[in-house]
Image (cartoon, rainbow, N blue to C red; front, side, top):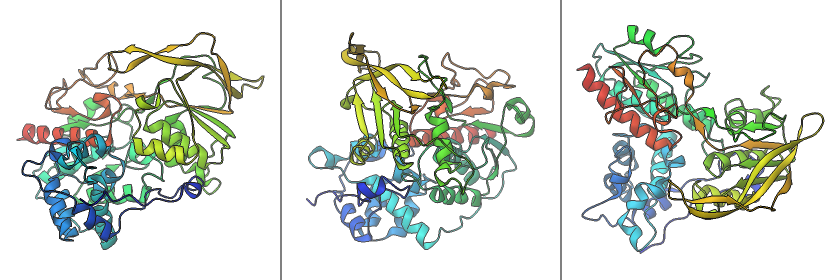
Length: 455
């Protein structure tokens, strides 16, 4: 059995100093070779690991025959954002985890093959899709992140007139403001958004629902609504010093770098403080993204501070390894207890304490416990908090009987319908921060529910 094709990447010493894409993608020969590893098992399990139900065996079968056009056509039957999903989805815990080949060998690189197909189509020129005749029904989609785009795409394909309301000046949600250029180039996001616009979807940027209009007001204009506003409200630890100059939430830091292009200052006039020593608190993908951005902005030393061990890091293993290769320092089993500053209220470091792992908590992970007497200071002039996000409560302004959980998420039933008839919700605003592909799955489920409701 041929070995799994490695993904070509920029050398670590080069990419640590630029914002160009790290992973370079397969060549046609590599893609066909990797597709050839699929054993075409009689009872394929991979599809059940895909939240958007791509017919994985069928698209890989086309790739084996170098029919890349047929492969992307099959993918797009259920996924309108393949170039994005092929880059940022955690395939190793989804479709690839169920690959039968993976029981004895490495699983087929399904995500990398999906990316190849999408890139191949984009280079040739994406075909303009044929629009479905209008049903005369109007649907509002609040938020243009992965959940909103997936819902809008499927609803437009059904023939409904779809309008997306986006709070920021560019469509894409977390895809455009949260994920760095070196992992997900913005022109690729824009091309995927353009495809959805070609389906007939109208996008209204700079439109904050809860301020300019409310959900109740949208109900008067539209036949149905989907809420996919994500979880963009940053969490903080509640420790001393979080109000000092030089403390960022990961959301603000990444938004300035990605959407507002602070890394190209002064070409784009949104500056960001470029620290020499940077601490990023957290161990997820957002923490890795923030740390790697800080390094590329010129920091001499960037540290990930995480209270559990390497085994518990929630980020994708590929992103962790890339960060390590680029020189990011991992201060594991460590937790900040106070952020330190000088007389000018500028950050000078963080007082941290060493941790040990005790018994498992409700999540199944071993609970971190402080080791008394292990307090120490880590010098820094920037601290970035990447410890999670919550839904912005603004969406509940003027939203009638929209029911919320104690965590501030929207409560929905198994079909994605909220407590308001004709209003569905999905993605991070329902589940809390999760993956791009799971948000897309929720958007697709809601589209089915809305379609049935409108009938």
